[in-house]
Length: 68
Image 1 (cartoon, one colour):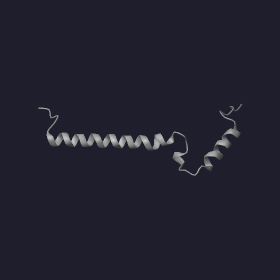
Image 2: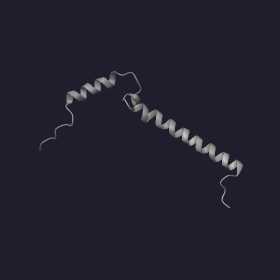
Image 3: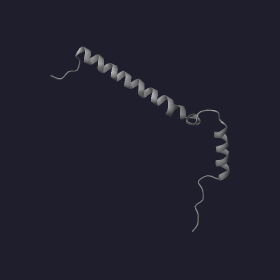
Image 4: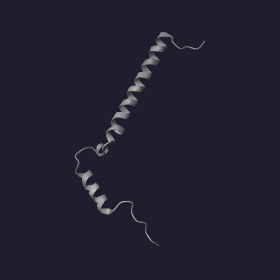
């Protein structure tokens, strides 16, 4: 049996590994776009949820949108 060639050379992987281990940030914020996925998206989701909850409470308290 022959083994498959790796996707990336081992030297390149070791280089990336050393780079990421030398950064003094949280593990989930090390990539260039990780702040978008781990910070901005949850904040946007929370803001949207709070807006919709607030609008629902307002509509219920004023009797808007009731079906007859």
